[in-house]
Image 1 (cartoon, rainbow, N blue to C red):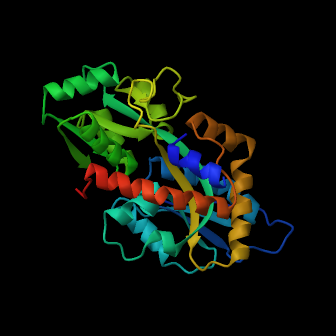
Image 2: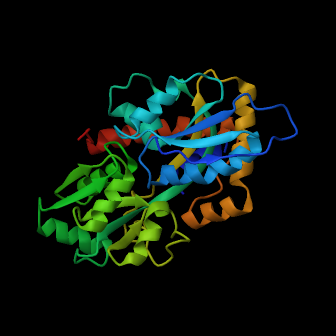
Length: 325
């Protein structure tokens, strides 16, 4: 669990898959179709979570729900699309800390997501994994750092885009471990992971959600995670904190957002639908295996958490000197 999550808890604690749902015994939801915008290409954690949530949310709302990918510009294209959508409960965002709280410190955005999106419910928060292509001759994170120091300028690291937590973790490695590496941004974590698997880039961070299915291939190797404790899904992989790097306790978080000015009654109905979906036994088990705590709560709790995240990521961008590549 990240430092900001601990503080937040103390304070308050077009590829489209369609899911049809029966009409529930309550007032009909005002949209015949709800779109969840995933601001990344298929294959990354955001897209995975959106497609896990869509069927249950369709059941809860009594309408149809689709997932639509609008990737590009480190999630800015899809995120900005939702900031300008009609506030009618028909267009939602499965957003994360990259698009909502980090990019505003790196890009000249048309709309500030913090003021033009309404938090509905936090969905998940998962640690990152430092991993390498299997051809890299390092079996531990500290061995990797020593190897990179001995070969300055010869190592690149991949991320799903400038401003992503994966990018910022790479910049923190460079700064704190005194490493000379070059950042290679991709249009999403799925393409970044694919190129590390293929050996095009040797090093990257990825969420436990996206990387776990790939570890059995033997083509990549997990060296450390950024959780407060070891991930349930990767019990043999030590944390960066265990290895003596206490600054590297961080989570990538995800949540459902609606356009600002969406009526409070719709926000509450969406929140209830999302939370019930997240607490269903099957999805709760999936989230637990991903290493996510049970973070589902009220819109007010999610907004409070985001308010505490803002200064953390602003400070990290400044400290690392991260730039748009």
